[in-house]
Length: 467
Image 1 (tube, rainbow, N blue to C red):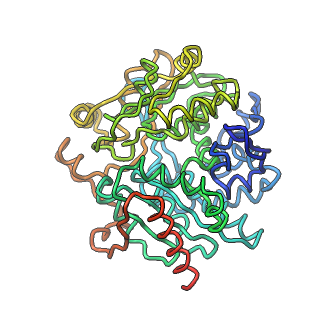
Image 2: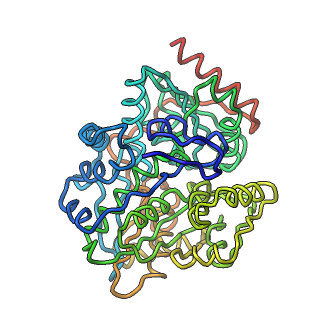
Image 3: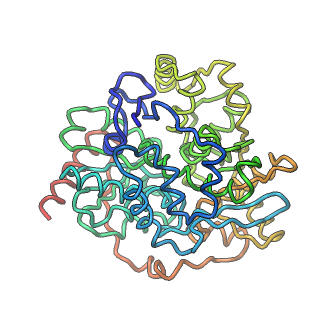
């Protein structure tokens, strides 16, 4: 498998090179040069497999020939060994025809663990083979950072620097990152929004001399390996409900568009998916696009669902590239214009192709709280402020006869204030996190400027090397 950039001006790379490089040097995102397609028999052969083996079989076409199947299977088994539910991704019914797939049974209680635990194993494997070291720089709106830190802590071949928007994550989310004191981990509290953090990371990657000096790599969903490792749980859910003989639909609370893009990728590989439903909070750029072809950046507004407080959804570029018939020049022109003007000029026919598969629903904080309360009263299910938006989208767009599976992306205990306000229930943290509020924190506050971030990255790598 080789990978190409959505901007068309970067060399095609192998999986291992894409894993270590993250963002393409032309500023684009990597995608497979050709999509693997599974036959009906291929899908059927995955039924009943333990989740780690299923994940390895789904990912194998993307990692070949760099990583053989037995090695990949072993890495997946190690990645999911610490999850606290035997099914890894259990499914439960909340309403007639509406189901929830729980993706938060990993060490940091969020769906990011599903891919990040695999990424940690992949990085270690490839870097050991190459006798190399990389500096991971990532931005987080709440959950990516803690998942990346947990997956990479203590690894001698990785220096990890995570940017989070100061004061714009929940306290649990922040403490999950800032209480990890391993010498290869650095947390930066950026005086700005998540979009500022994401832009700063992209600026660092666009500075090729700095990128090469620091040997930068990425763990955000701009890294294709993140998407590849998220595809399997859609496959698992679809098989549970009768695929490939039966269609299913998915509803996903979405900020950076990576999670739902993995569902689209599963469909592109031949999984029978009828609908993909986007759930947005008050930062509703994706829903505005799907409903009215309005991809216009507005100010990021803090919400009850901070992991979705995003106006620039990076992974949308991958979908746009595909909807444009893989026309890299057109994709580059549209994305360049978007960043210059704050408005994405998507051709009407391209928008119509998106609308034929995707639907969008946005809830503000008041509506989100009401949904949490109503769902708990009706079904007894306690959903966090992100997951409940996906569940609401699934309810709205569900078609009779087709199972609708909403992705539960975070444990409610990560957002205790919102849960108490909506239901009066203060969900307890798991035993391994029970002392989280007593642990010592370590982080630096930095301004949202490229130079400040570069200085902090250099200092973090120097400290790590000295240690």
